[in-house]
Image 1 (cartoon, rainbow over the protein chains, first blue to last red):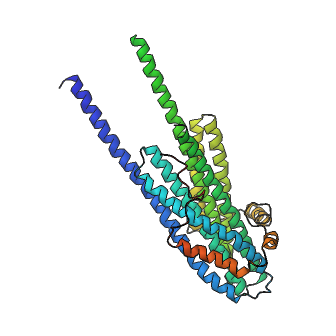
Image 2 (cartoon, chains in turn cyan, orange; image 1 turned 120 degrees about the vertical axis):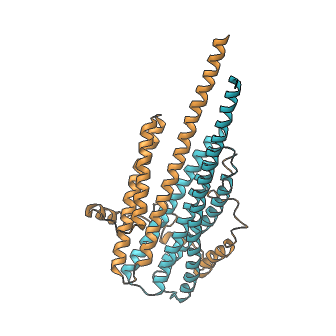
Length: 183
Length: 197
């Protein structure tokens, strides 16, 4: 075979090998994102059920309970967490669908990272809802002040941690946006 | 003429190489932030378990939940330090140091996961534990930026927007969300279009 022939053969082998490796990476990234989304969906579903149970507990609450003001404030904050969780889950799904069709492997990775970060936000938001509903349930059940203090503190800390998780997501998005904006 | 051509090709190759390095760095930092978001999420989950077991009468479960939460937070602190190291190394172009810091970050994530869900309840050093419990007394309320400000937020609520109607609002959101459709367009958390293809 002439020299040009060998070169053409080597290029063809490299292209085929590169394509195969790329497809494998795309698939692994899609799987990672899908796994994160499935996990987030499960927690969102648990939160949805907890809200149904929490609503029933609210009807049993004495209007003059000392904890009513605290619950009111928590519900306002938790409502936002729920909205964020649902939106983030949708964002995770949208990101995941773009992984396999991304033009380059690095862009596919960016969508996978965004999808996973969104799934983490969905999980944390839904977990805050669960914590809040657990608190409501305990107040309605007449739990001791000590245990209500622990539960209330946990909800407040969960809210703070969830906000930090969202800030991390914003950084993920900003870094990737800056990266792809300049190209 | 030929030398000039070689020089041009060399310069283009260098530009491509530098560009590739910058891409890796940005993607790595974004990935590292995603790991941090996951660990923060584990911290939320640990608190959720605490809220769920408090008052159940199962003291052992409460102690276990508190120990797990403390261990997750300890891992989160490690992760934050590793991320800071990674960012610094990346900014200075120290690729090896950045990789080492990323390895520490991943190890902290594994530790957090194990602390939250592992078979063994994590051992927490008594001093660390005391400090953590003390820190709890100063978090979550006003000034922590959690969007929850205790009594002040209660005062801001109008009389007409009663307690049950507020919860109904939450419940309505839930019902609207079961199909995951309709009003999902404008959230920063869900907005992936900021990353143009």
